[in-house]
Length: 277
Image (cartoon, rainbow, N blue to C red; front, side, top):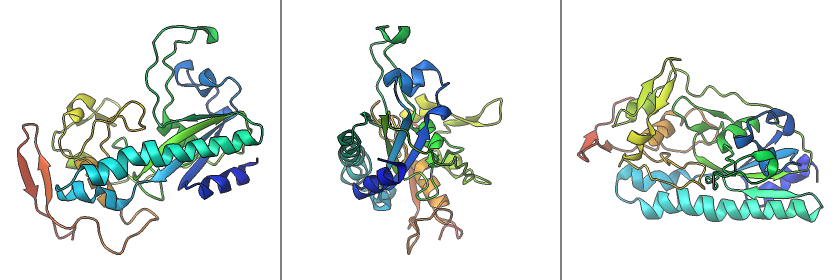
């Protein structure tokens, strides 16, 4: 199976995004985040993505429904049912042709934190799907920490396949969708962002974890263990990117005043500006 055949098969199975990160791009990474620690014969990391429907954010945007819109179709079923099935079937197709394939979720849980073989590497090897997605040419990590693609902005979830199949890598894509934009940072009701010494934005994950504006805790297996894609910051990012990404809609996402809760849980409404309408 060559690269073209692999990508065609992935799309046939339902992939919206697929990129290849060849061995030379990550071979020198630290052992605790290196694909070779999991698969010593790995030659390519395949990063597969499924988009999150814009409509899955609607219930949280209106503040009227969280679980059966975003939590199921945007998060849990999307990542752990639809995407997982796609990853498994694509890995199975690779193995059918004689190459080994290691299917992985977008996040990897901590191991036992003990050393057991493999050159003394501790067993809590964790691969960063966002960093690998960048190495696979799918996009870039934005100012606010969201992984952004030219197709969907931040509306996607990733899974991984490690394989000994040598595949042609995709060109690195350094997007600048955050230029002149601080929408996600301004939208944070808890002021969880701060500038560090390097003048880049740092997110205080402890403060963020207490957010009740659409953030859902997530799990380590998720590529978004602190899932804030549908939170106040994530929805502000989505609105700001509407005219910058490839997938366009007939109408704007934001329809009315934005609700938000502060650290004490007090809810307020922020009226839309003329620019928002």
